[in-house]
Amino acid sequence: MALLNFGAKDKKLVNRKSDLENFLRGFSIEVMPRTAAKIKDFRELLPSGTRVYIAHLEDTPIEEMVATAKRITLEGYDVMPHFPARIIKNKKTLKNWIAMYQGEANVTQALLLAGGLNKPYGEFKDSMELLETDAFGNAAFKRLHVAGHPEGNKDIDPDGSQTNVNSALKWKQAFSETSDAEMAIATQFCFEADPVIAWANTLLEMGINLPIHIGVAGPAKLQTLIKFSIACGVGASLRVLQRRSKDLTKLLLPFTPNEFLSRLAAEKEKKPNFNITNVHFFPLGGIKTNSQWIIDNGGNAAITATSFEGNS
Image (cartoon, rainbow, N blue to C red):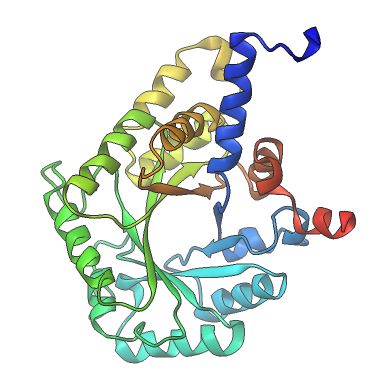
């Protein structure tokens, strides 16, 4: 019987593992056409039905995006392509993209965002203008996600505040109450839990109760994360990486999201109405590396499609 008597430290570790596994249920992951092309079969890496975002960069042809969406859909995944407003020239182009995605890849989900360009290609400058077209208003779109910025966004609020970002989220909250689609906020990747928790709580206080799918960087070299953080404007979270870079014992080790996600998982367990409901991975260290971390830490929530088929 003594073997069953966990010490306090053991119980804490078991609870943290269980909390993390629960928190990872329904996770999503982001790919690009060129990174997806390197994966022989996503069923070897992800559970069936996992939501897979497809990032649309400025120089990626829509045909390549649609082909990637079709391939991943056929492998059994819920595809969510990006619709970056500033690279869409006009409403005709937008409707054409939607027709291609739905006609060729049966896409029913979309992430709407402004996109990283300073100057729009055409008539759209942000996701709200996309939503106002009603192009996503048909019943074929079951889910729409919009962007969130826990650390703010200097392009939207140059003064460092979150005034315009919060105003946009209030607009999107109001829109969600008139839409038939399920809506949620998908955020940029973050590394520091306490500011993220504070931000999520602030949104609730403002009356914004859209579920939050928190962005997190998958395991990667520290230098890689710092490079992407600077490029993506994730300034505040750089503190975590900079502190780690000063510790010579950790400098050469890959950064993993264990601490960050375990803290959020504990908050979710403590407060069931916590509005961070899902985890969204940016596989900056590679899709296979990220997927292996999920398999190692996600328990039943991370059983890959091929593993499930092999055990059924």
